[in-house]
Image (cartoon, rainbow, N blue to C red; front, top):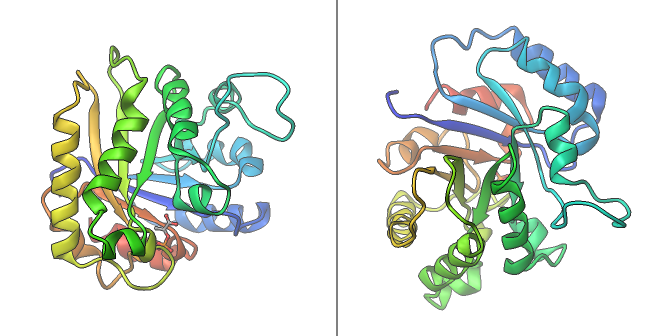
Length: 250
Ligand code: PEP
């Protein structure tokens, strides 16, 4: 592997504290020194504070939150702010995951507000974008990707150097066991590159991930696409064995 790459585990609402520790203890025993890919684990908010300590115990691992609130501070019962995440040593945050867009009603504008706050903080965003099945069938994929990226980037004043991960996650491929084809991913990642190339993102390092039913059988094929810099993994990240199987292929 000679490109900078990322293997992001999105545990969603699946692991409690003990299960999370059990997983990381197992990961700690694996020799990761051969592979230079960056692992980012995104556990529940609750466990982040304790789990970030594993950064000292496992080389090449980092942690991210699965979400953050769109306001910096105030009377927003139950929400978590950017500065709260910064203060516990969290480095990454997933924004705009399709489950938040579809199930929890997040809009492109909500996500844009979060992007701006995150961009101005010490956190780095993992922005999720992707079309639904209906949008794919109606051949609206490129319009959707353009709207999602342009809105998310619109209010950012690109003045500082930042790592930004964009995860192309077709909604119809998430959690279904059916990944997008290599041809579709290649095509849509090119569309995403073109959209980004038309925005003056200055010195930002933008990496493109694919997400949607990545597993040990399709990872190396998808990673062989030049523009794919890694994966955002849901289901297959829940077991250390299946996650590691993917990790070894990048
Ligand atoms: C996801 O939820 O971001 C995801 C990619 O899930 P899965 O790997 O299960 O499709």
